[in-house]
Length: 376
Ligand SMILES: Nc1ncnc2c1ncn2[C@@H]1O[C@H](COP(=O)(O)OP(=O)(O)OP(=O)(O)O)[C@@H](O)[C@H]1O
Ligand SMILES: [Mg+2]
Image: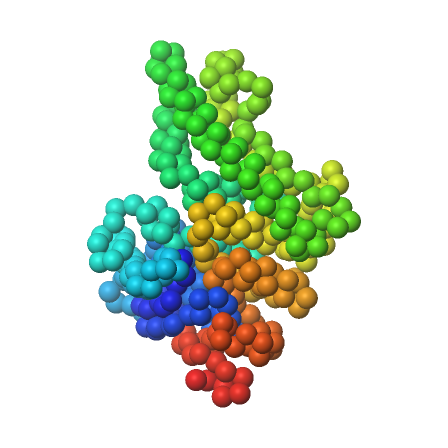
């Protein structure tokens, strides 16, 4: 899908604005605190129903907005054949909660919206993919599994609910062992299914990732390996693991093994990537992981991904920015990236004028920008 336009009301310093995007490359240029990340946040809100910056809706709603609600509305082209754009909208209010609409119909689950509009956000915190907690990497894998495997989000939600029940039982003073075994049975069934989906996806992802690395010239001198840990000893079933570790779980008061402990390890010639690679190389590697998602989704579902990159130029030189953007555009992604330096987009606008747009954000207002004519 591609987002053809967006209208935003009361998101951070963006009071009331509308923008029409290019279906391939969009640059968003502006000074610090002008509203660039808030624009990406609005796009992400519209595509997923949530912010990537906070879970507290009151922080996102413009502080001057008396109604204490924000509205983001847009039009998406879901397929190349179907020229009719689909209207989507998200309204979030402090008092009334969230409302999501697709083609005028209210929908209950944000997963339906997320499925329709695959979006990836690359932000400065994306370094967490290399150095942060395993949860960040599990969420990264699950983004791909979710878009390929329809039942995945139901399985995962079900699993997490059962896990919470089991863990709360483990915390009780007098544990009902029969009840615990009931949860073990359900958890092992769901956990194996989740893991099967993840393994199938990772087999595909690993191959794609290698071709992306080669395209970015990243594995020329050293070998970069991607290893998936399923969350328990893979020579055993989850049922066996839960059974054998029941007393330890009771002692520790939580479930030690299962897909909620899965992780993804990146190694370069056997070494930790964050210690071996330069910051620029690390950022390139992180973006390579995202590009591999875009490529997998294109190959498996023929879907177009919307990629948001905040402050693309941070840590990267112009050659690498060029490589990243060319790779993404070749995969038919729609890209929106923010820049502090007005000169970065100049070459692209000169070369690909028809496919590329640039916007200037200033004090929460946005205008299309042309180097010759300045603001259009
Ligand atoms: N709820 C809110 N209401 C009004 N303004 C807000 C709200 N939340 C944040 N802001 C302000 O919105 C402005 C724009 O923030 P944003 O993060 O979008 O800037 P930016 O252009 O990405 O800046 P930078 O280049 O420094 O990353 C900031 O001045 C910020 O303090
Ligand atoms: Mg910003």
